Amino acid sequence: MTRRRNPKGLPNIRRPTVANQFYEGDAEALREQIKNCFLHDFGPGKLPEINLNNYPRSIVGLISPHAGYMYSGPVAATAFNDLAFDGKPETIVLLGPNHTGYGSALSIMNKGIWQTPLGDLEVDSKIANLILQEAKILDIDELAHRYEHSIEVQLPFLQFLYGNTFKIVPICFQMQDYYSAVEIGNSLNRALANSNSIVIASSDMTHYESAKSASAKDEAALKSVIDMDAKTFYEIIEAQNITACGFGPIAALMTYAKCVNSKAKILSYHNSGEISGDLSAVVGYAAVSFKKYL
Image 1 (tube, rainbow, N blue to C red):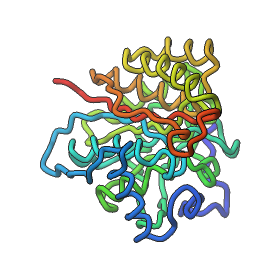
Image 2: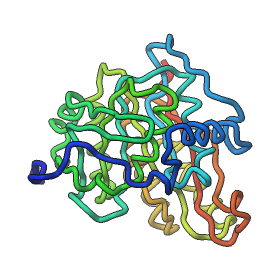
Image 3: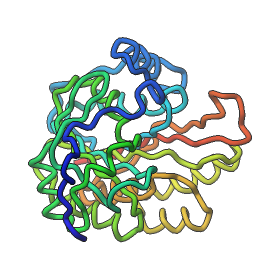
Image 4: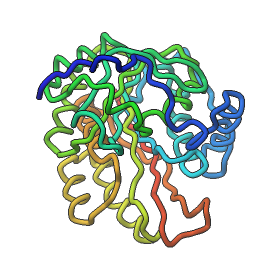
């Protein structure tokens, strides 16, 4: 795959594209919104306790949803509550699907700033370039990230926990086949060795089916996640026509997590109908942690 450099004129500042849509655009209102996600009945029911003294940490990865905070925020808060108690990573690699169709098939940003209402986050150029050395199928491409929301919506939760004291590496998946996901996962294993990092796969689960159907399909897919079996995960996704939008990022995370001898645990599962009251056409949301057991 050709390593495309940034087209002339593209800024190195990635500005928020779904503020005031998926989440509050004002910093104070956003903090209050995130606080309410943690306190929600579908969330952890409490504010996070940040354990800054825990190192080495045990959590190597999370699956977190990326819908509007009104719908998926409490489930996401469950994942981030687990992370807070585990300690503070220095670098957070975020894997998200490409909903827009812009940019290259598999794209990474290896420099720049991501802005949210809660401040600026720097791309970790050192880690990004290590990943690029290992994953030859990745392109350097800012365009794929410019309007994509799947990674953006994770950032305010992380800033709520840690401020702007960590760095990020965003990777966007337009191509989500099994072999590409496994290659990315194996590359992360090599690139992230000996670093204080975590990988977050951003994905919603089944889209626009009845709550009963979505729950059954998502249960089958998540079982293969718990089993750490990426091949079976793809087979179930295809056989049952499961419309999880970030199956490639999930499989890449599963591959990485298996390499570092971790186990997966489902922290929360809910659907949009439990908020809206319409159970006829829901979107499923899951929070999953991957924890290393020594």
